[in-house]
Length: 209
Image (cartoon, rainbow, N blue to C red):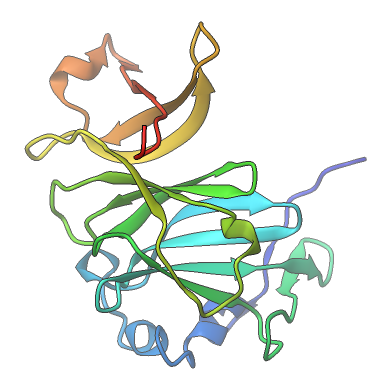
């Protein structure tokens, strides 16, 4: 099978998803007003794929403490272009999921079976807190449901440095499930030579352990 690149169709200097969301009762005003992403405006920072579904984690906006994950499906339109499949109860181009992450936005997503691991941090330009959550069975949750993912652990952060921005599942040399965390604005102590940087490998523990 040959792979090829494609992008979402654009309309009037925007794409189909942004056009659809502009009329959304929860997110539309943030998009229409062009609120800056780092000021609790619309900002996609997490992405994870399960089968033919794409989950997009929003750093912002956080709505009265609730973070948002968008779920979309794509289908071919013309060569090199994709369109939104009509999904959900009202057959629109996306589904919405609302999650309580202690008032934090989403910095990254990682798929673990049918669970979604969520790296959560401030929506605005603040150092912390940064926390990890597990949304059990998240890929199968119905839309427009208020979900309470399980808190897993705190993630370290620095003073104007070491802002956790990405993660991936990783097994250490003993085979123990772990999480590899990488940071934006890494501390000088993390820098190795001209092009190296040290990441963190954290044991993936559940909150009840």
